[in-house]
Length: 360
Ligand SMILES: *Cc1c(COP(=O)(O)O)cnc(C)c1O
Image (cartoon, rainbow, N blue to C red):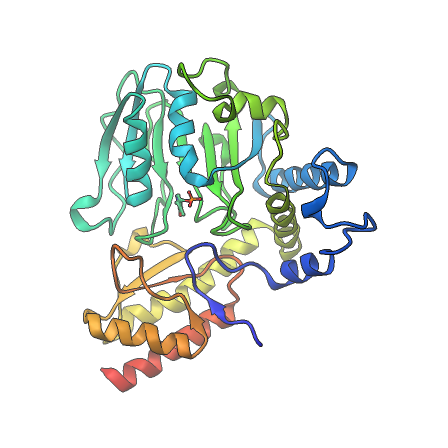
């Protein structure tokens, strides 16, 4: 049994070397006589795992000392509530709606206060990023919220919004560690790791210390307070231990590869293979405005639903898995995260060329 090229948007492909290492350590993690799944999260072995994971992540992203790194649970979706519960002191926040995940976060925030949609690309099915250079930021806004890479629609903010001094909160689930970031531009970045970093069930939040206070909205559950997790170094309760362990291995893999500058270059090369093909194809076309294209998620269509379905079926038979577009947008989508090898994208493009020759 070989491995397929897995273009899933998430949970998604992980580096093969990481999976092999984890398999080798499954029964006996480094002489402990047990797997990481079976050990106390207060043990020395696990303490080393979580501390190294945090140190490597800090190193990779250049996270300044005045930012906390939290390993949390509940998926990225729980952050849609935790963000307002912890940050909405004035009960006002500004949301930029660039797709379904941003919209869900916005709708969740409305439960807690006056969440305003200050920009949106819904008018063209989220195929672009709106101009965010001079938005009507509310004077009382506690933060401005974006989803930086829109997994479903394949757009990415290339320039961060002008928040006019308000704290910026970003969901980076599907562009996590895909390229270097300037952490200092954000008050908080967070992501579910199952897109580009590790197994579902772990969320990593990087939060500037001054944002983490005891002053949360009344009724905020203990488990949803950032301060509780920050004070306990992500060990307030049993953390998603195995997920953190795999993330740690992926961080080491990224460091071995040369870090985020190198990953960016590789990701640009991979994405260019696919976008260049789409731009000259007579059958396939990309759905996103060129300047807003994501390096990670590439949606495309033939313009004919039957042909799309045929493509998905035949590509699967050829070992190219999970190319069906999100159920809300149709067509196809190739997610080409860090762990997707260049050969995977080359194989996809060759398959598309062949499909075009047969079906154009
Ligand atoms: C997948 C995804 C989510 C939702 O993640 P869950 O862990 O399933 O809650 C949120 N935001 C973005 C950008 C995503 O890609």
